[in-house]
Image (cartoon, rainbow, N blue to C red; front, top):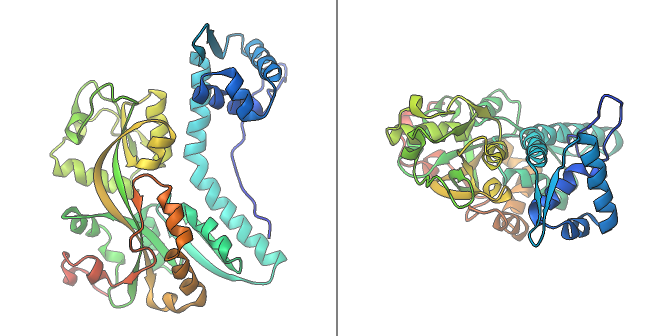
Length: 364
């Protein structure tokens, strides 16, 4: 069954109605990565002459060059070129999860109309790079339909309690901060009626520019007057973890420049740092590598799926658990920096996963 993919598209147009071709951002990205027009042309599978002509046309369109050529040093994006590339990266990073959620909803509806009714697993989850691999994983089992929507950890757990999803994805730090984080989720946890499914462990840390020019090594550095920070949105599991960590480190939020500036994904805050609009952000490691940033590890956490007991008896969920325990998912996780899946697909009680918490605080 064919699948729809929804992606944002840029339209660059001047007052005369002249539009640029779709190659613009792909070319800027290739030049940024390779530093050579010849290699950028190879990456885009076009001739060097065509690549040169495109740059000439774009320079004329904007009235200023997008690329500077230096003899013996290759090419470097101009300030305008860098800003255009940053704008495209930021838009993709910010809108990506919402577009994936929309595509999931559309594919589900299309499959219901044109195919025999399949079994649907509704997943509401905090955005993460491992949970984002679930649609690809379930292509191994085409009879199962996945309705994956990205919400904050708290919103996902609330959705499960209202019966709006089958699995709720959230994450909790390891160690003593785990109980404190879990206290924010207890109203939605029911020990006798629910079980936890292990997905992955992952590392969260600080995104800093390549080479760490401002020598940002710890959370205490965020209160320095020369440091600009960009935050995640309220309700996101990563924001909850970050607030816990700075409180534990006794860092005054009022002294963190940019604490009130919010973005909605790990990739979006990474793009902010990559653009130079911020010096540091907090998130998981893969987007740091994607945007060629350095990463300072701070905390390790578990990403879990919460389900009602009756949900675990459904054949399609049993099949999903088998896939999570298999080699295909292990290979997917192995490609994610800072991620591991030692217990993926394992079902456990709340007490088994969180023995340190007061079970009396979890009331059915």
